Length: 259
Ligand code: BTN
Image (cartoon, rainbow, N blue to C red; front, side, top):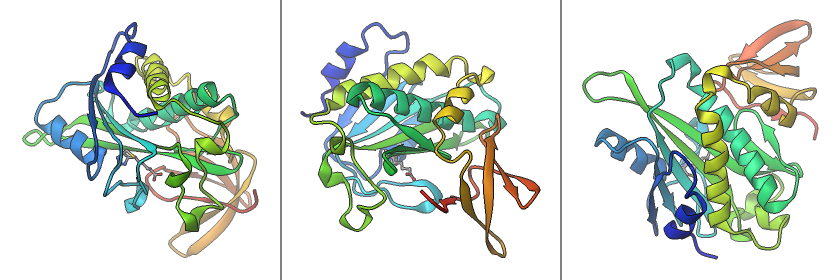
């Protein structure tokens, strides 16, 4: 099934913030397009969807493999949030995607801090939220929330088959329009209430890291620690041999020591 703007719009007809949807056959990165449109004045709720990306971007400067058969989308937001709460957009989006994937596939999902959606121990979705400043003001004026979901089998790179999965590993046919609409519906339901951070309880319940031992890189190499919590600002709280540390999302990516 193809991604179609009209289908998504029909499914969201009752939603207050009905997004302005743009579907591109191919682009380098929907996040890049989103930022460009934001700087040119596009309004909150603009959604850019691409059927494939030639330069999909991931966290920490990585690339995101984006052939046809996946969902690659970026939502432009102009949040009235203090900068220190911007990470909440990402954590709320992770909850939104986890719920939406569960509804559409009927299978359980988990969240690997910060923003990867996991099914059966494999990553099926990544989220990259980028903040942008106005050309003149240098103040944070917008955020581009990028979501990449592996739907069909061809979206899983051969060399990453052990750690990356796709929705079709768990469900026969996934309707991408329904999934996009459901992600947006869930996200907008939380977006108005980001200052309350009430979705954090669910985020933590879905966390695949709490209670597990992880390997954390630091300036001297790596150390292992037990994940005890995730705080209100989305930082990972770990116990490294009795020393409690808080790890900010932008800093590192941690590795599960055991599955
Ligand atoms: C990650 O796993 O590190 C985050 C991946 C985010 C990928 C999405 S796909 C749509 C949007 N456009 C991009 O270039 N990246 C995000």
